Image (cartoon, rainbow, N blue to C red; front, top):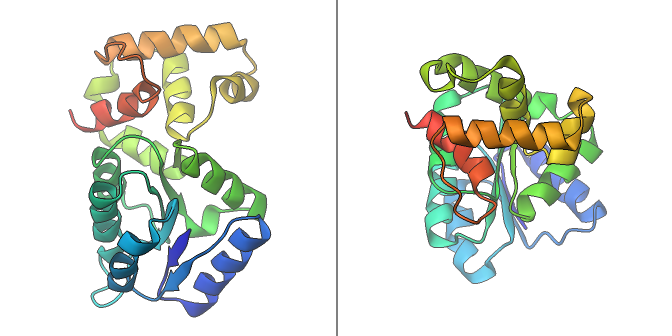
Length: 210
């Protein structure tokens, strides 16, 4: 894995947490350009990037993440931000399917939560901070107008990267009920069965792009 953050303390803290969780960190960088220069040779399984980095502290991390998605599609991406920046989350999701995450730094409540997110992203999953999901849903209403309240709850948990079993546990319903809601969401969003696991991500992406 590789890490890029202009804050030395946060960067080294992330490296230490990832290494203690059993991951191999092959590079840590203070800006996005350094990471992009090293990534083709390192071919990391996952890159953890701050959204705002030098020189402008605007969207360097997002731009680097999208470039990595195109150049190294097998590399998972985890963006960390101090703020909910909906446009950046939308742009990252629109750049590909699976293996992506967007978390707020202040809302990563525990080391276990962070390492769990890293593991799920590295395995091809999608992890979104609940506050990011809430703002994304609140921003675009029309595509979700036909969803029931329960289907909205299931979609939000899907967007956070939860499995059907985890959704069932969270909502205190059976897995069969979750599967029924997921199927209904796919149908209402016009997502045909492609035979892949990416429809869970596409359910979010299709809604964002309408």
